[in-house]
Length: 438
Image (cartoon, rainbow, N blue to C red):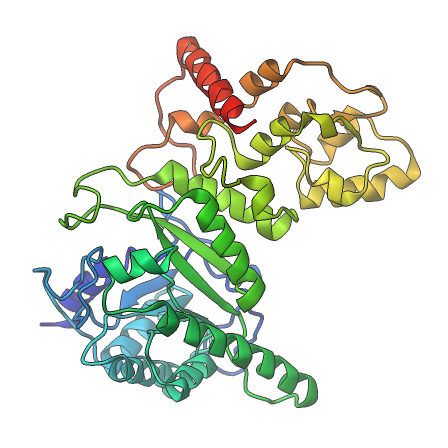
């Protein structure tokens, strides 16, 4: 099998790993090839929203594990291939020289054993770093049950390293991935966290100390293949952020591709709207200071499909509004739908020189279409007066009407026009959903 055939098989096998994120690292390549910048290397996207600036590929799709959800599981009849370290390193450099990519995302099935597979990945990265003098961005997936020494070597060669947690609960993991265990997944996550902390301390003392996973670590969860609620998922994510200082938790809507009695039927639609809501909630956790129990609860464990989580929270807490943008602290401003971290910082700075009107807020980037129902300003000192049902009707998320089986797009999607009757029906359902949360 030639390299082109291997690439076709192994690039297609890698498409289920989520990796569209900024690099998070800042480094000049010096006399070598490539560099990393904080703005990230994932800035080039295809029409359906997928990042194309990384070569995203598996070392091999041979696997000794038989995870029920995985296309590459041992018992599934698919074409198999494996790169040698030399082939993959040369391929990466040739792609880089042609300006096809800026970096590498490297994962792998488990061939022979976790240690053997990791040794092959390390050999590839050593060739790139030392033989080809390549200092572009590299994201490597660590394999559970790999020895600590090999995890450490992998972290010294990669900018970002990640371990997939796979499922939100240990019960689902044991059921759908019997060869994996929660302990085997969390152990390397803890080691990576300690390695990053130690590397940071060493760099403070020694300028040329080796960098360990300088862009941090991330993980990925499969959504929709197991029965856990949205509340369970965001509680777990908050715990992972707190304990392991993760850069990102990725949520991957399960795409039914294999047949199994424990999984959704093959050919079904992936839960893309649910994935979208989880990313919105994740943003609230990381950037807006929300706690999981503020977003959802045991009584209301799943997202309102008709409204984004921040709007849903605001409508459920109308007694806290309106807030005066000229006096409210930044933490309160961040609770207002339509006000983000950038616009909140601008408001805090600008109001020192005078009271702000709604026109001022619009120029600062505030989305008044959502914020107007929750704020008071210079030209509207008591805020707007609307009924709760009227606010709900105005805040229905239009993306509800456009989610289908295609991956989310960064560009304007082609979608059917939304009729008035559809909006009215959605509003009525949104009100019912909201009443169920009160």
